[in-house]
Image (cartoon, rainbow, N blue to C red):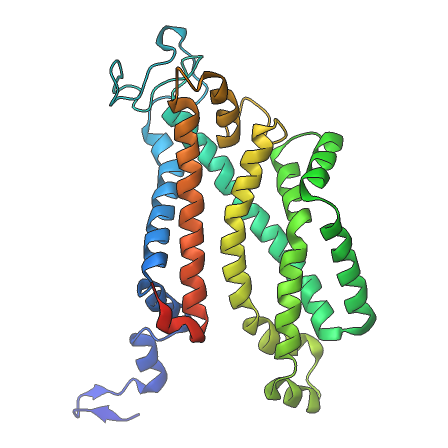
Length: 309
């Protein structure tokens, strides 16, 4: 151990790096903070999450509480609006703000769970296909081609019609329809990584395939999957809203953004807020995910670090 200034022990290079916050996570956070799109998208997304999961505990009204005496109250900034219902009420007197926040919980839960399931399946199959190649690659990719050849909406409606609409079924169907996207991305990355010198050297000294995949291959394919998962999460929210709009999503009485759009279209001329406000919530959430995905892409791709917006 060496002494600095004769009194304080020198922490050593590893400790200095830790104290300076130079780990991979700290480096990623610094890169994200330099991206305007990532900062804006992350801030908006954090506000949406906090509003959906924290605000309902502070708000006194439940999303399914009805009061026929307060039907079709407009938002508070319009004539006749009340602060007790800041975003107005619907045709049954239910608070629109409470329903939007409850619907946001469903959409965010569907997005996160679908990403986790689809990424898990896609990474396993894509890694096996890219690393082992040959018949394993051909079999996995041909199965993926079958899923891609079948129209997504027709596949989704068919499965839900057979099994019935529910939150777990919806997540399973969305993941089933999109695992191929992740598998193809991972497969391409693995094909590139396994040709690099350190992987070839690990093979030459007899390192087991499991250790090579765990220590050398998978860490190098996580970046594109992270970016892809963030962007695809926005698509899952759109798909969930579309299915709910058609009555194939989460069944009532659980409110969803798509269901609110479907219910509000019948009153669009007299109660514009019933369809407009859930639509704005969908737009802001999708926009924030896309901006965050762009920032992640710029932060994780060295070739794009000079093009931050």
